[in-house]
Length: 162
Image (cartoon, rainbow, N blue to C red; front, side, top):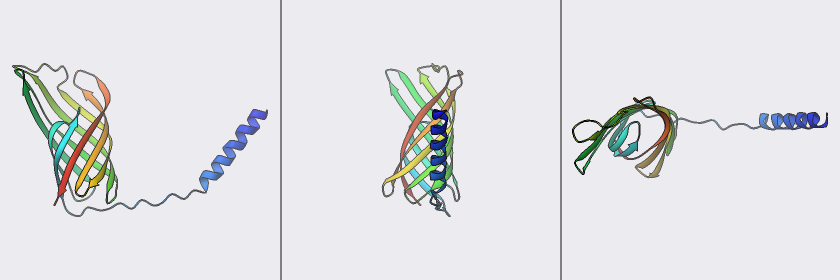
């Protein structure tokens, strides 16, 4: 009986304490014209290499990624893309949802990868480090065409211009 009374008091105190907290209103910064970005990206869903990103007017942006490496008579390349939707955007940071699609190749005459196509869904954030340089990190649940599904990170760095 004592433990029930103690738990009841703790729950009552916590619920009344949290009810008195007023959350600050998030103001979303609007983008009324396209903003472009060039940089590098690395991820298991959308690929690694040079990256082009365009923030469209409103809340959507897209990214195209491509890279190639040739060493020891083996070629590694990928091409991919991402679609992002901003949940919260401020002057120096944004939080977004992301979906990605990519094709990966490894081999000398045929693709040695068991799951060359990949699809990812998840969330990410982007921060301004030095104006106009931004870095972003994402966590995407990535589906490989061999049936594997893994939560994997992606990173990128972009220089933005109009």
